[in-house]
Amino acid sequence: MLNTKLCLSLLGFCLASITTTIAQDNQNPILDSSNNNNFVPVNILPPPEASVTINQDPKIKMLLDIKAKMEKNGDFSDRYKIQLYYGNLNQANDIMKSSKESFPQWDSSIQWETPNYKVWMGNYRTRLEADRALKEVHAVFPNAFIFRPEKK
Image: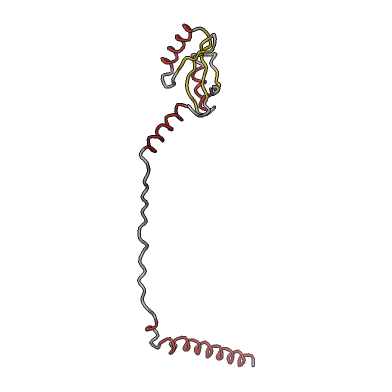
């Protein structure tokens, strides 16, 4: 009895599978009809390349160069300097000469503050940059220190 029920259910399953497989093989006659005439071919072209033309006054480049030079010199920004000496003019000249010989990569200058002279070196953008330079300078000028000059 069990074998008969099993055989009948297996036979029913096979028939159902075969009919669905055959139904999938048949093409739909509605889609086969000549509906292709309803579609219009469209050619899609890529967008044209964009171009931008900038007209500027030639003085702008000159002004940018001047600004870059002023920033490098520290004319209008907060910068750090190293003071090497504070005292009389003769000694200040000697210190400046030896600083230019020892550290040619940094500019040195003499500043006058009544009644003495100061020898300043460098023009550093950050405190870290000034600290690194001071580490080298201390070998030759042990009394040197970092400061930020006041704007006049």
